[in-house]
Image (cartoon, rainbow, N blue to C red; front, side):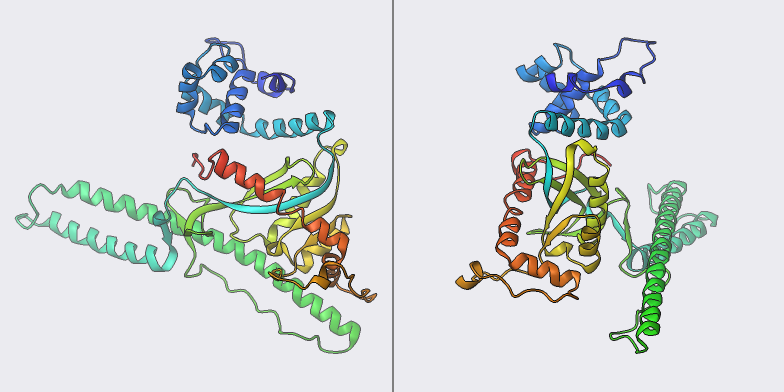
Length: 394
């Protein structure tokens, strides 16, 4: 409570007009949310009950009892302002000499969506098949309705209601297909831009060297939806993703960048991409947007899922030394590898070669060893201690 009262909550307070019934003080509602999250109380109904049952919650709420609708409305109304509050928390940690950016550990974990994967509708395999079935049933029901003798209609069946249900489902399927087509169009535009860039690079390379570039020619992207394209009818922003030990679930890929010295989360994000390859650049951009007094990231630790030439070059371009694994580590490496230094790199080494060399040095091995014991405990605390494994919102 003391920490929250020390934050600048002016953006919250200015949105209250001072009319109508007396409002709860924003610091109280924010403290209830933060303390609830920190102790694993994510449900607003449980939070409301805790203001009656828990001494800690009663102290934070100053003896008041905001209902679950008030807490939910506050969170929904000030969702944008809550992001700025967490930046203030980092600034407070810096003032207390607890945080100084230097080495950052980056990793991702799957968080289940508040939706079932069985509510996912694929474009070709599911949507068009059900659409054809429903259209056939609508025609059949219309034919029954037009008959003078409706003895063929089963007893208790309401024809108008059955027609309405199928028409609503057809409208929902049409809307879902339109969204899948819009996603496919955006994907095609992105892939087409990448294809043209690659072709231009090959052409420039050929003009400069006078020789045909090695490797396969870039494959032009195909327009339109793909057979595996789908949308979830409950939570259309979520995606079916592989989840370790479970198989495939409707989920999000949650990213966290953690200060290695304190294990404080300094950057967090949700993405719909099942892999982590494209998450280095957004993380670096978010780190650069943090207040300058927090310091500057000097090293980035990440596993092989983040490895790409572009990501390594991006890190080096802004002065961040990337310690990103280039492949799976051997389970039983020889003892010499722990003490010997690698051969010097050639002057024309690529970003991948520099990254591999860096991880073979003693200093590189010591730096990369921090990754598992900094970022993975954070996810362990969030999922196993706090119990946050699935979103409650849609």
